Length: 404
Ligand SMILES: Cc1cc2nc3c(=O)[nH]c(=O)nc-3n(C[C@H](O)[C@H](O)[C@H](O)COP(=O)(O)OP(=O)(O)OC[C@H]3O[C@@H](n4cnc5c(N)ncnc54)[C@H](O)[C@@H]3O)c2cc1C
Image (cartoon, rainbow, N blue to C red; front, side, top):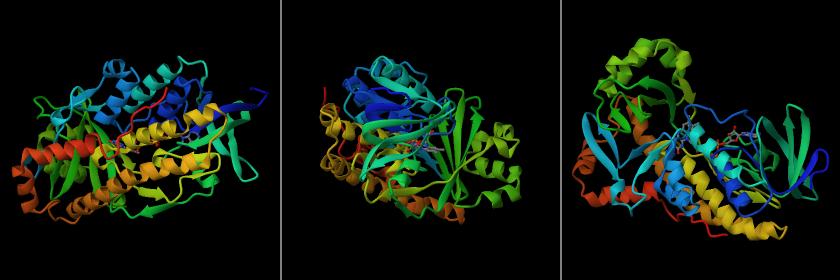
C-alpha cells in the first residue's frame, strides 16, 4: 500500500534492461504488484546487445507478443556467417531449428525495451520509474526488504517481498547485498562505431576476421553497428597511432568498407566496451536475488547477453511467482534459480573464454584461427552448423513461461 515515500510491492526490480523489463512484464501479467527502477530517463543507449535469439522469440510467442515484436524495425538472419581471411563460412544455420522461430533477430535494444515497457503498461499493477536510481537496500534482521532510491524529486523507499538486482554488470545492489563476483580475465576489448552501408554490400555477415583484427558488422538497415576487437587496454596505443591506422585495420579485415571508413573522423564516434566475464558464487540472500549481467557479465561473443538475462528472468518468474502471490519469497526457491541457470551460464562463459584466446591471437599478428580449423569449419557437415545453431539460438535448458 502506498504510504508517503514508502511503497509496498510484491517485487521491486532495479534496472530496466532486458532482464528487469521481462521479469517486470511477467510478474505484472500474473497480477503481481511490481516496480521497475531505471536510472536513465529513456532506453536510448547505442551500442548495446541487440541480438534476440530464437529462444527469446519463442518466449515472446508464448506471451502472445511475437507478431507485434516482429513488426519492430529489425533484421532477421537465417544464418550466421563470418569471413575468415577472405573465406566466407557459415557458422550456424538457424533454418535447421524448428519453425517458425528459425531465425536470429537484430533489434535495437531501445526499441525492444520501449516495446516491453508499452506492453507492461497495460497492467495497472506495473510501475516503471524512470530517472530513478537504486542507491541501496533496505535490510532488516538480515532480510532484504526493498530498495532505497533517489529520483529528481528526492529519495524514496520501495519495500517489497522480493528485491531483484537486474542493474547490469556494474550492479550497485549486488555490492550492497555483500555479493562479489569472481572475475575471469579477458584479453580483449571491443570498439563500437557506426558506419554507413556501402553501395552493393555483401550478404549479411557477422564478422570479418583476419590476422590484423576482427571487425563486426551488425546490420542495421542502411548502416552497420560496427565493432573492432582490440587487445585489452590497447585503446591508448591505437589512439597514438591515429585514426588513419584504425581505418587501415578496419579495411584490412573488411576491404568492402573502404568507401565508408572515411566517415570516422573523430575518436568521439568510437565507444570502448571493456569486455568482462564474471560470475557471482552466490546469486541470492534472503529477500534478494541478482539476475542477468548483475549475476554474470557475459562477453558479447555469440551475442547471448540479452537472452541469458531474459532466461534468468523467466526462470525466476517460474520459480517464485506463486509464492510472491502468497506474500513469500522462500530462499530455497531463489537457490533453485541459481542452480538451474548456473550450468548454461558456466558452459557459455567457458566457450567465450576459449574464443577470446583465439581472437586475442590476432592482436599479436597471428591468425585468429589456425588454417586447419578454418578448413574444418569450411568443409564440416551441415550437422555442425545445425548443432551450433541449436547451441547459440536455443541454448542449454531453454526456459518456458509456466504460469499463469
Ligand atoms: C557495448 C555492448 C555491446 C554488447 N553487445 C551485445 C550483443 O551484441 N548481443 C548481446 O546479446 N549482448 C551484448 N551485450 C551484452 C548485453 O547488452 C547484456 O548482456 C544485457 O543487456 C544484459 O541485460 P541485463 O538486463 O542483465 O542488464 P543491462 O542491459 O545492463 O541493464 C541494466 C539496466 O539497469 C540500469 N541501472 C544500472 N544501475 C542502476 C541503478 N543503480 N538504478 C536503476 N537502474 C540502474 C541501467 O541503466 C540498465 O538499463 C553488449 C553489451 C555492451 C555494453
